[in-house]
Length: 73
Image 1 (cartoon, rainbow, N blue to C red):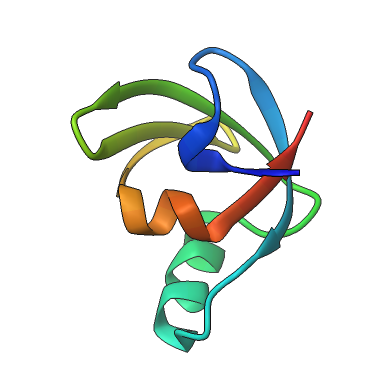
Image 2 (image 1 turned 90 degrees about the horizontal axis):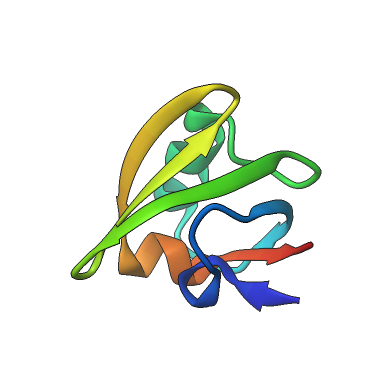
């Protein structure tokens, strides 16, 4: 298990858990459809921003959010 921030681009991962004590961050990720069991792909990394694909939609998240998302292949 790794954080999404350490993932490779164009690789599909499965979200295992969200590691944060910030409820608003968890709610935001859930609103994007990013929750345990869901697939996520890193489209690109631009500095400390990540473009991810979740449920056929693209989102931009910062490195703090990417670090909170724990994934596996």
